[in-house]
Image (tube, rainbow, N blue to C red; front, side, top):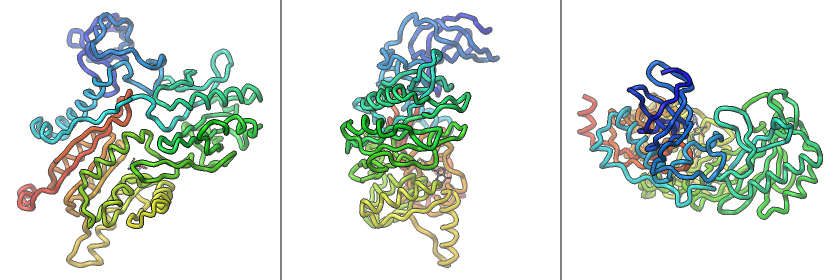
Length: 472
Ligand code: SAH
């Protein structure tokens, strides 16, 4: 096989990035935008010894799972990867991905997995689910100011104000900002030169409260003619917060370090499962509130709290899971590495009048072990106790030192929320080799049309005689 070869193949599998996988005489081809079941013609773009990357040229026979994408930029845009796959098939893909990793990396048997796996939770309407959007501004080849989305793996902006994952009002806001920039000849920032003012706009929408936040990210200290922009934006129903954030660094980080209010207040309010959150332009907040509520309700169901429990929520972010669980537990401790997120968590506890949640800044793999050791020193003959430990780590999963302390604390239950099923499988293997067994596995689709997969696992402590068996 050589570069530029044109081949015909049947798509038999889906890769981790949502690409179609086909074979030609034993040679594996990864073909972006091809759907499992398609018969396609493709052009080899990059040939390695045993596999290559090919471009989809023609769909010879469409798969029964192929659908017309809602967005006409679905292929070019880096935001969605599998919009051309029917939603049912997307859900099957995600479920299989988790199961495959648990088998291959975790070493769990298909029998066990069939017994513990509950059906994936999808969305009734898998579009318009994001409560947050960050649109870059730039200049196209003709010199026009544009906003939209980055094309996959580049910083080329595809002009598109109508993203089918975001809320409708995004489009109105973007048109207002584009008109404003045109009227006052305010230039968009250009990464290549470092010139220009408007870099990004962050838009947030409270699904429950219908409150809207707009934050302009600028390469400067002030927004010229800001009053005119405010006049146009504030009339939109639900507008609550208009701010700007100054970011004059040559960086891929979108937001600056702080923000200033142009109109209204510096935050919007929203609810997940009855808990109220104040969300500023710099706060982390789950982007799909509908599915988040389902996921955290499952965490609560799996924890099965009766009111007397001590719970640790590691990697707690702004305390979303902690506050959910605090409603049913005696005491919750949250641990998170980002100080600002912990500030938000404390504030969220206060505005909800939740008094049994305490938060610590630090690395989970440092805070929990040092708490455990300190407790043992201060209480000879005893050890720190937890009834339930919840973890929700970033993609790289948990450090082994943390997993070790967790198993030493011997909680009855561990609830593992994961955004990467490969590291989840690795960590579950460790936990199951150290006194725990898997009781439930469930995948929740937080990000329809993308390949991201979120799952939740309930583990429970093996009876102590079994535990000894394992250790011997
Ligand atoms: N449960 C949270 C979000 C979890 S996302 C919520 O529902 O909002 C993972 C979080 O882990 C992020 O907030 C990230 O800042 C934090 N984090 C990353 N590494 C960490 C570490 N070593 N120790 C503690 N927190 C960490």
